[in-house]
Image 1: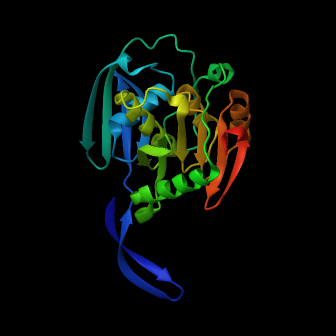
Image 2: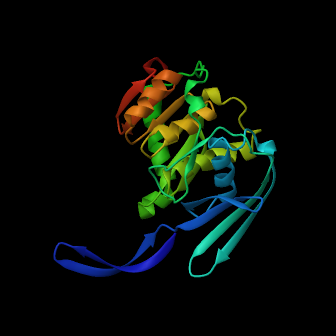
Image 3: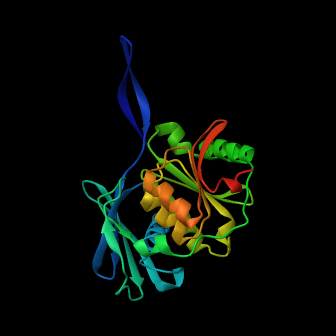
Length: 259
């Protein structure tokens, strides 16, 4: 966060105050000497973001395919970071580039085959009251949002507890960061079919790509889903909860997992 001086106007009065502002940088992900993508993101947890992006985009299948990661910061007239990775052969990946409806100037790599893969199996159930408690805790954890209102959040829930929490200016980036963290610390959780993803952002089909690839059976958001996201969740047996705010929520698929 940065603090800058602004003028605040309320009704017919104005005052000079110091305001907290969200920071934004460019992150370029290079594989070897070739640029893969440039993202707009928050400056923290860049290694997690890069790893999560590579995995949820289908460019790598596991963390062992990354041989080396080096992060470089470049400061000229703007703040930039470059992540240089040495990755095993990525040729032959059946991926399509799509422009996500979110932050950043780089495309996502979309794997349509995921949507026809095996349905996600789980015995996970969670009380609706526990979801309300988790969403309240989730919102309190977002210190940057509480101060700036300028970031999205994502978290992984295991055994009804939030075990990983990340923030970023992009909703896609926040999810990639929590998944990247899990990949880099894969001893923390071994079975993701008993996990839940919490997100502050809109749930669209490219968000579901990330959930399906990691075989997470439930996603809960305080925001809205799209029709395609609902169709994918129903086809893949993913529990989709939207508008989880206060004491209410909408369940769009697999309601049997909500007690």
